[in-house]
Image (cartoon, rainbow, N blue to C red; front, side):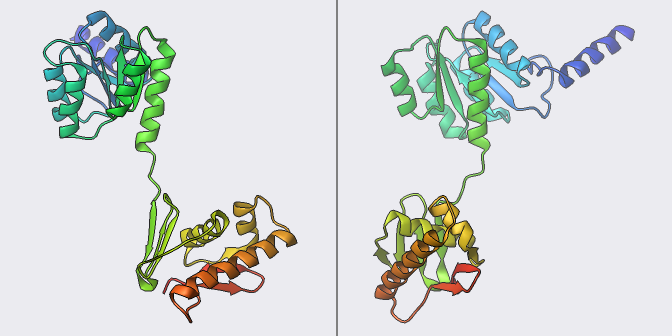
Length: 256
């Protein structure tokens, strides 16, 4: 009984400190990395690097087993070798993508520029060439996971009541199904108002966001941009003022 308790205590300590080897013990709440590699020494090394960085780890020595684990376990990221028996890494990548969209970092001895470009073109999140530095692996894994779990900002703002669409990515503005061409500064002002609608955006916030400062001159520039925006909107929908001015406060986008 005492030996059994000692073993349990060791696992408890492991779960508090370094990550857990999930090939030996059940998964915990830590982020989980699957290492897909046919070389056992490389698996051992990568597991140690990731565990010391605070991750749980699993491994697969062939592609078919890797695809099954992607389907069966709640994984956060896959480290994928390319040159493997049964299924190569690209085939494994294609099969994994059919199951779930999971971040993948290729880690391979194929490290030419053409290999790396090919990998990125196929949709991998990063590419590490062998031989690698231990810290490089853990830091690249952390960076990919940060990007994967970062909340995505809405790229398109739609205001149905006024039939206005502001595309933050393409910087296109569509009013009543008609494209409104804006200069970069005009779009900067409009997008700021759209992001904060229906709240009033103060003069100083507009100045800092668009011009990098707030001053009487900047406020005059902002006032002129608002005038230009109103004119362009009126050409599409005459008689309707979509941008309201609140004296001594700022501007707001009228969205209803």
